[in-house]
Image 1: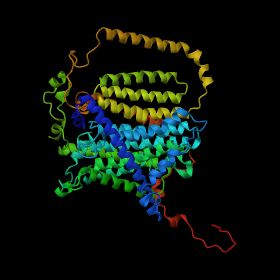
Image 2: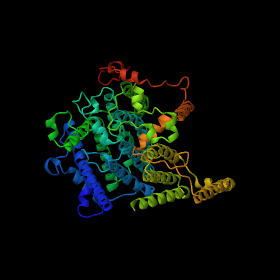
Image 3: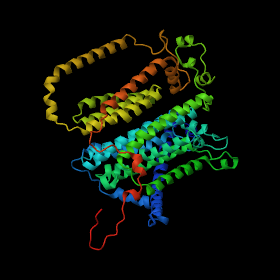
Image 4: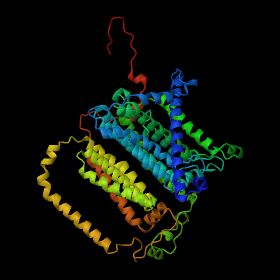
Length: 380
Length: 207
């Protein structure tokens, strides 16, 4: 897009700035619109499973329900509890919302359609998603009320626990793809299964990690069956109890933006992102972004389906699952996958591993004259 | 131009939020300012091209360590009067720490005035940055040249982790209800847990 603005005679720096601003605006608008529609889908799916109609009043088929809700919330009065810590109380929903949007900067929607194609893309997402917990913890503390506080404690422990196993799963994917760049990871999945199937899910070693990642994503976004942070039967509405109007809406939007982000991560890391599911020429006539959106939507439907089906976990069971099942399992798979990759000398990364001589200080090169690419030397 | 602006923004915010960490009355606010200062430090790292370190800083310190800080500080019941009571007692120690920090500051400024140290190779020439990414460069060094030190650090961390677990581990008291066996809980079927009774009208049920 920078070239487009440069064609108006702007200097490179200005064109870059304008292009980035336009990109940010476009992505946040699209994400917000998708969130509105996805909330509608969520309620419709829930309604269908519970044998009721779901939203069907505002607009055709109730399609405009989310916008009506938004308007309602916008016109409501913002109530700040008198005992609350005012600054932090107002800051918390803003942080949740901002963080939920910020992670989208590195998500590639199609080949090259990405705001920031940085080479630590996956780490960036991990970093940003680990910030999400602050919105919850701050709101819980600042509300100065017992239920939100319990909820904040639960959220802090839950998110940290599941981030650990998510981190190890990402390591597995990165090992196989050979890069932290999300575009590179998607490209590494081209023809991964027998040269026909695009996607890491077809890999016997990565498929279990895919399942674990999906379940961890449910826990990370505090979605049912892991919605302990807002368990109605125990905690009223959890950390959102004291919030009203727009502040509440920001939590809500941020939560769904996070869910969509996790769905798109499932798509990008395991289902081949914008690539069609099968390497077959006619499927490439469908634009990549359509494949990306379809796959993301598929995962969102799974999220909704699970919400309507599975009862809530007990808190100790949640912790047990995270620390005693997922963590050892993902650790085992990191070892197994790196062992397999080393044993077969199979390295499918788009860039070869670095020759240590090119980055190490000079004396290092002299002590080890036979500096070869790591994968090659280990495999022989 | 934009780099200079970004540098002064990040650097200014690091210093300002670091000052606020010690100035804030409320310890929770202190932790939040500390997080802001971590975050801006990560911004500075990105500016010098160390994006990997920046991301690690955010993931490890902001994402995990500071959450635990916040967790603990939020649970504290702080009595501000009692905190001030210790002020006179701790005053000499505080002055000593402040003097050491001041001396270090002067030392640093003096070294900077004398020309500073060029980062790079041991013989003093600046190392040129290859076109390899941060992660690959760090990986090649950690798993090549510094492999022994790296492994030793890993072992030390493992020992520390096991130590922490051993310290916090508590055996169940004799006579207390045993640990929950989740396998047993899942294996339990309705037939084992429930009894169907058909009581007469107006009579209770005795099991």
